[in-house]
Image 1: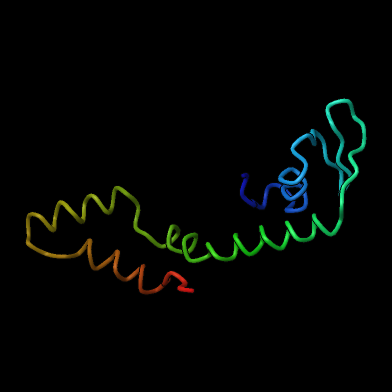
Image 2: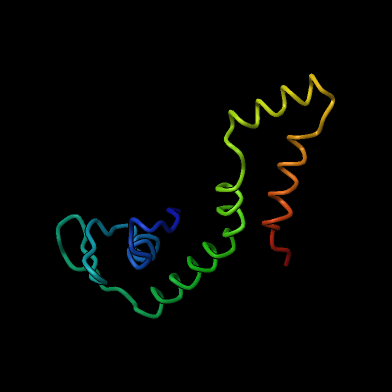
Length: 106
């Protein structure tokens, strides 16, 4: 299933999830490969939008962590220097990001 991204309106993702035969979408109108309008159910679309948004919101910590982690190059450099110096710079940096952006528990 395609994930919500700011590049595509969430309603389009919901419609594509519910109506895989949809080839083109304009607003809330979906059309199949023959450009015939697909009968859609707005309450089903609304429920799918709610589900998609909840899924997206639940991953906020992961997006925040991804932005906060040092680059891979910096992490490798930290690990190299930790090996040489017997330090824990890399572990400390990763632990700080995880503490700053905790994973939600249910």
